Amino acid sequence: MLWIFLGILFVSIAIGLPIAFGLGVAAVVLAVISDIPLSILIEQSIRGVNNFPLLAIPFFILVGEVMSAGGIARRLMDLAGALVGFIRGGLGQVAITGSMFFGGISGSAVADTAATGSMMIPSMKQQGYSAPHATAINTVSSVIGIIIPPSIPLILFGIVTETSISRLFVAGIVPGVMIGFALMVTTFIMASLEHAGQTRKFRLDLLWQAFKQAWLAMLLPVIVIGGIIGGVFTATEAAVAALLYSLFISLVVYREFQVSELWGMLVRTARLTGMVLLLLAFATVIAWFLTINMVPQTLVEQVRAITQDPFWLLMIVAGLLLLVGFVMDLTPAMVIMAPMLTPIVTSVGIDPVYFGVLMAFVLGIGLLTPPVGTCLYVGCGVGKVSMEQLVKAMLPYYAALLVVLVILIAFPGLVTWLPELTAVSGN
Image (tube, rainbow, N blue to C red; front, side, top):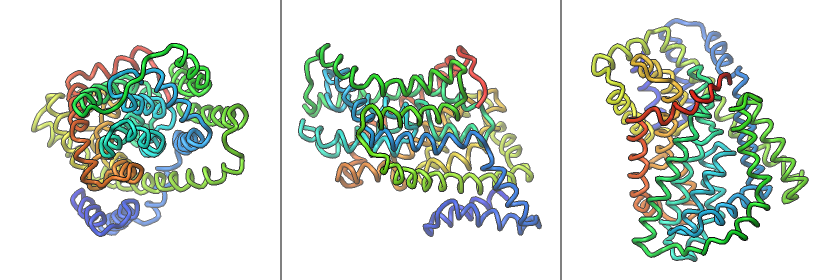
């Protein structure tokens, strides 16, 4: 059953069929082979999307849209410039820090790439960065946005594996900061070698001015993360609170976009949400087929026969996910692979919250690798560089991400200590 599913999926990818439709075709074929009524497919697909935490996805996507148009993202970038613009690498450091701020609100790597790249790349070119190097920094830093909460991939992982989304959000804070620090160190080294990126003198008065302009925007991550940790609301309710707050400060305080622009934002949000939900609906059907045919249980037994050491098991799984990331986008990879891999890692005592963060990170790297890396294509468009130029410039940053990945695998406590400390529960 598993090989039939994988065969249909790979053929779909090869002929350019959208993965959601490929999953639908596979579900129908499996139903016919198993002599199962097609009505059950409808029941299972509805079950997959009839989930309250899924409401967080469109709300967080819309928050990202409002941030970009309402002046929130620009103010956060200005604050990042005042904070780290004096470090070697100048605007490169600002782009990474800005991505940490932006990712801490939007939860989308693609939105981060487009928003920060369009603001930062032209200025970075003027300061001596080559176009590929400037684009590489802005593109690779977008992976932070899917680790630091809120995170759409972590929401999906929580739904398909029935893991607490709130705990996943809290667990992503430390790894997200580690990724940002690793990228800043790499940017420091590369800027020193290329003599690029002017620095500016640290000035407390400029920092204060930037903070006064951005403090209302900075309350957004406080609302999301602080509210979840404090038990004020769930991750889904945090998304609604973040949207209402971002709309208020964008329309009433900053006044940088009109109510009429909301229609376009709603349409774009609906399109992206529809894609995610269609994938999730068909993936739920596939997961049900695999479960009733004992595929996850069989995989657990076979993998445990190879090794029961958590470190080497995670290294094997991470290598598999890196390969998957080369040929599949993050969202379908998450909804397809998470239900199959989670029982394998939990069978040797690995915390599913830790594995969810690790899986999101590994598949996030896939967004930065050819041939299907979504952020890579967005980066090429924003930076006006070729794929070959961008991939070459990103090689040092790939190495930095892999170093962080090995550290997280070797020391899982870096991920789990904060959710254990705060004892967050629920969705």
